[in-house]
Image (cartoon, rainbow, N blue to C red; front, side):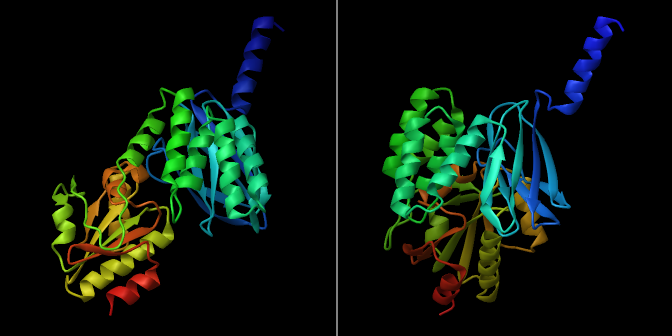
Length: 331
């Protein structure tokens, strides 16, 4: 057979079996899960909206367009999240047990192997040890996309964010990744962040809701009681919180005003959730920047869900559970 033909056939076989340079692929298998659905989103905004992964006989595949390195978050039915670090032309294998998701392994690329190692290291560690290991990881790997996830997850998205350490680590990472716009945006959002405590006044801001109407600090301060809720379409508990507060606004005939901040990158997805859940007559802000959003950070929010209760122009509570919110506002 002609050598040129053989070479062509081999090339075709390799392409058909692998992932092309414009995509990233996941091949997964989970024990103790026959069928189901997972959601996928990107915290760095490289994946617009939410994707769905179908599981059949414990197996699943997912292929996504990928032009540069990006972080994917797989959301499981119990709302556990698994980071997967994607790169053009790469693929990974995910194996684990649905009853022990924390022990899941993602193999195939160096960033995912690094994340496996960190997860193993912190599996049985104390909270203080976890912070120590997370910081050491970033200091050892400031060039890695994994470090951005580590800073967000271990220093920012927690009940008491450690902004000082996050700033130090981000500055270190930018020395090694000076062209990383996602990191620059994260740095700016931290620098613009306001810390709100009980009796604080709402800082000045100006924004627009999803219908183009202006929203500002006076919108939150002039009502007798206002509750601000931060939520996302991929986070079921946050949607439940928003629904509960929207119902309260309706029951009180507007005496309790609801302003919500949607952390989706897609306004279309935000509208879809509001319409499907029949959440009406609430002010919705969605700037498409997720947790790097201007208002979200100016109000000192750091969790999903998160909330602020404002009474007579002053903050009276932050980051309450749904039960705590209802107890406070239905008195």
